[in-house]
Image (cartoon, rainbow over all chains, first blue to last red):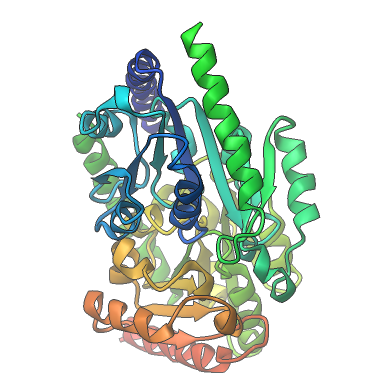
Length: 222
Length: 222
């Protein structure tokens, strides 16, 4: 009984996400769905990313949280447009939630919309929101066994940002093990090693992201 | 449309979990449901706990993972009975999965059954499995804002194990902030500060756990 219900929810969501995507495309807007476990550093990476890109791109952020708006307040301080979604218990964002939130923006005035999903390494990977690209963060404190234990998000993502590399001397985690495991799941994923605390590696991630946005806009305009 | 479906699943699950609990009670068996984010240290805490308790209590473990059996292999090395549940994509364990797995044990020969849930700070808190008690781990690398962002698990748990305190000098996390936030959500929760890496604080957690098991068995026997 349970599986058909879940399938039905996913099919309905896929249709709504496709409609969202059509609206984003008409506005020539590039959309990223950013996912990770709780505390891996989504908001910290956004702060660093916005700092480096806000003079080049017009950026909007949708913050997904079960409750509260701590992260949205952090992002708002960076001077970009933010809308908060409180899922009220739900463990992921879906197409309908984004449909509501996207109406809070003047989409045609934006180049890049970043959706920060609820902290969860499982369910967000199943629910499209209309994004051009999924990106994920794995922090080294979570351990190098995570790709093989939670494969779907690694399979679905176009980019993996390995965060908290400043803590590598203190934890039992090898970046080469993460890279090896991820390469078995997804050959095309772009992998970055960063520390949102020290700033190491952020420039490479941001340069890559900016290129995706401009390439996406050129393709959409053709 | 979605909310009634979810409610229905939760009600059905509650009934199955209640039946599981009756079976556990008849075997005078104490059951813990152990939850956390991915990589917070559930398996490491279990290894340390089993090491200290296995000569005093007969212990069984149910390992919940989306796929693979790395953690079950680690636990089996400790010389206790283990059963693996692979959820095949599902982000939490439920009563039905435990019903299947519990039949793999001679329940009357066990004192303590530990259920290691899927790594997820959200959904496992909603699904009872028939446990006497929920316990959770938060690692300091996840940040001290997690109780207020993911409150349900903190509200539902009888014990909070704050893990990775050996990393406190290197991260922006204050244990007193976690304690303060948790005290607003759950006055009765027992809080332990441990490092599964150095062993610090584990003895206090294990002593408390052992007392819960014996108290539970005395109450069930009356």
